[in-house]
Image 1 (cartoon, one colour):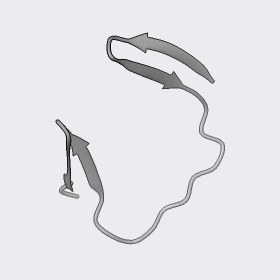
Image 2 (cartoon, rainbow, N blue to C red):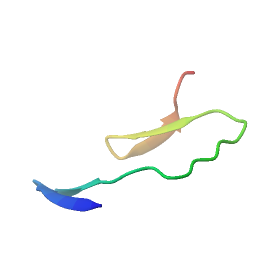
Image 3 (cartoon, one colour):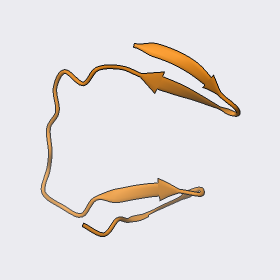
Length: 39
């Protein structure tokens, strides 16, 4: 993986080698709030 400066954040870039999903409503974090994300 690699790490890049992004202002007041750090951007991580890597390769997904495994993924799992679960049933349920997805969520989104935006402007400091966690809320439901329409599917």
